[in-house]
Amino acid sequence: MAIAKDTREFQAMTVADADGILMQLARLSAELKKKSAAAEKRKAEIELQLAADTAEQQKEYDRLFDRLTEYIQAHPERFKHPRKHQVKGIGAYGIELAPDKYKTLDPNLVVEFSDENGLALYKMVPEIDNAAAKQIFRDGGTVPGAKYTPAGDVPKIKIDPSYIEKLLRG
Image (cartoon, rainbow, N blue to C red; front, top):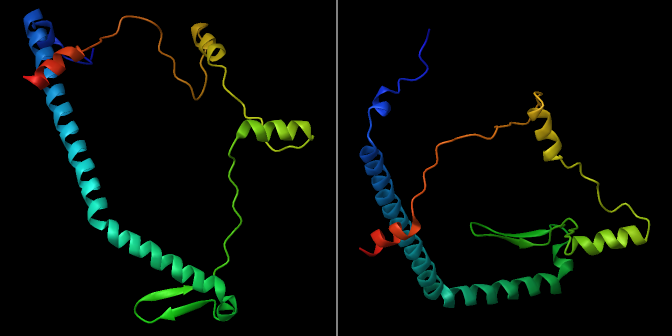
């Protein structure tokens, strides 16, 4: 008979050993949280500094972009053929055909409008009845594409957040 997993090492562990592992987990969790917070702080500081350092250039870029856009819109006849004006080695500007765009701002209003006017502006989407599917598993059946784990005892590890905060302060 094959042994799926050798658990002798864990069987020999004491409560003190397990407590020690939890303490190590708590310390590592605190270190990871501290380093992650420091990295997020540095990222935010870098983004703020970048915005401050480039504010004038961004303002000038936006102003010039708007000027060129206004020029293109003021002279559509200059962009009939060719539709773009190439500036060798730098880039191009001109007119292109943009597709139409649609964005739903308030789905409830669209559904209401559709219903009031007899339109079909939304789809009925099938939604899984999880309780019914779960009952099939409880009754001994299976449901393809679904997974069921019955209730029972499972290992759970929880580190007290106040202990992590204490480690972060100390």
